[in-house]
View (cartoon, rainbow, N blue to C red):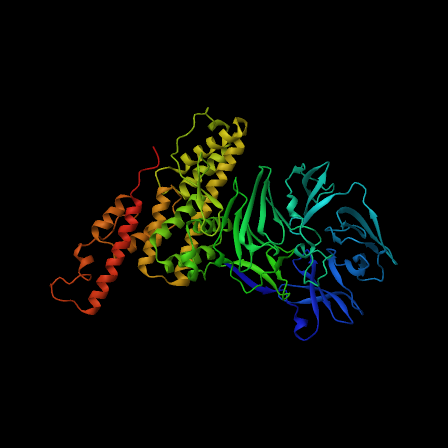
Length: 639
């Protein structure tokens, strides 16, 4: 499920031996700063994912550098050096002017020091976030001919009791978790705004057991020479999606306990501790994010998928086999999203999703796993992932699994309504995932709201009804009206226009889903070349679910299914499928004998081996079609 791509391997290391490398930090152009050490020389390299490297700064001596950061214009470089001391280690923070001979005064402290420059500069003036121990300071940096001056920025961000922080290089936002008057808060600062606008602080829950040993936290105070250090006594993964925040904390209850972590979301407060009973607590967690999906994993041992966008979040512990990797169990997430470092070998890998090689693990894929796959594809919206999933369904050769997957996938596109939640138990862990169940569309009683919806919104709904009509009995306009009413019930009558825009976004999302499915089917056919039976099976189940859930018409799907039905279905079957709207009327139905003449020997004599083989194959096809047909016989969900 996770694909590991070897990246950030400096080309110069192929020709050099007896060198030690370490990841020091990231840059604004998605490169890594890496330390290259020999016994007599030290250099900081800026390395691209393809291995192209540029020397940022070098020294003709050995220096144990634990972190570094480069200004956006590549003028300044901040380094933190670790030196032995009677208490263990001390740390020296220095800023160097790369294209001059100037440098700042050294700041030495017994706690780890970290720093990163904020984007942009004006007239040689830079800004920097500087962290010493648990104190965060906002600095103003100026360059003169002989020195680099640092001073505290008046009106900047200054946090004395810092617990954890994360800087998003893409969004340029600083997320800080800190204590204040016996409470813990989380603030999000926009570092691109002139006044560093912050959202109102959110009260968050920080577990006491989130404090980790130095070795587990990868803290520079540990007596280890690791290929990556993390300046904290904890391991928090914080990410934002729209107006929601998700915090994942690794927990440590002692060396003899098992691995555990806590998932929390805000502002809708949700806290849940997840245990991994057969994994030691002294291994670091790794994280990879795909849209709103966060994959929490330990290579070769554990994997969990979390969708924090849902309320409450969907949490599914996936089968252990999906965590297979050639990376060691001791690995760590890097500052660049979806990159990890193997702490045993120093190799760096980019994490991608890959559903093309899961057939050996098919027996372990339970119902909750298929729900999770459907949710991931719904969030990520990539045709290559869905085409790989279609091929996996063919290889598994189980119609019930096809039905389960497509039902879950289209259910994710369903419009807002009053729905229940069904807990699905996972075999691979004792964590529930949640899926929507379709309920009858019974519009709630509410005063007329049509006059309050803008004209442009109404016109777009009319256009959607024409271009992407519904497959089922509920029109797109009716679904839109019901969604607006459901949202008004939740938000209040003064939110009609906002509710209408949200409902319209759901319609657009469904349209995108219909086009995604069309592109995925084409890619699946062109890449994997399935036979006609499986083309029909996949398209049949998909059209069946689309009709049942009143999903938008998938371009050309019904017509292609009709062509396949003419070749593979008997006349009674074809007529049944036409009557329920799964296939279009046949243009040339022909006599029913044309279907059976090549399938059974009409003379009564013993048939040849080839005839027996053909008849057996067709029988299984007919049996599969009957199984699909049974799944369609349900009561109409709408009044």
